[in-house]
Length: 203
Length: 83
Image (cartoon, rainbow over all chains, first blue to last red; front, side, top):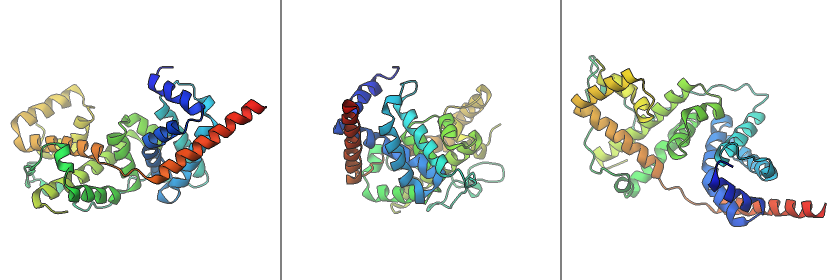
């Protein structure tokens, strides 16, 4: 097996060790939920994730270690979600909802493409210091919740789970250019929230 | 010559390191000369790090899910041994 950490965990999972399952669930639930959410939407996402977990437990012997455990889990989740959608025509969701603090759009630039509203200096310059502010954390949660299902999922899979853009395309059946658009829009909204908070001290 | 607006539009490719050599050079050149865009990119990277580290609440639901999964597995093991 090419993934030594996975193979150690897999042995413990096969023996049914509860602590191993807690590790597995804590590590991958968020990513699995993001995949399900992007494909079937919020109403059915939890059910899809549950079904995917059952499929995982029942097919552990089938995991060959040709991919990472993470890729395997996310592929099962995506397939479970797509099966659920089989009879519904799936729309590619690149919908864009307004973020609570806007984005960096045309109004920030002059006609010649220079900054009109230049970025502010921030008070903090590390993520740790920024995240010490409870109000900012809550504010960011709000922004993340405000993202469309596909924007939020792509952001989470890329920034928190570290997936390559190609992996995200394959899991969600979205073209590379759409993934890039979704990710860019989501990032700008997060940026706008931080910018707003650093400027005003308020959400 | 790349404008600030164009640099912002393409900033994702910079963050994800997906630029052609030509784009890389024109972005680097622009950033060398433009303090606003340097600040923008710096803050975009900081935003990424913040999203990565944003704490999520550990929920009790995950514990019960894990317990259930390991029970299913143990049941399966026993079934295999019996058959």
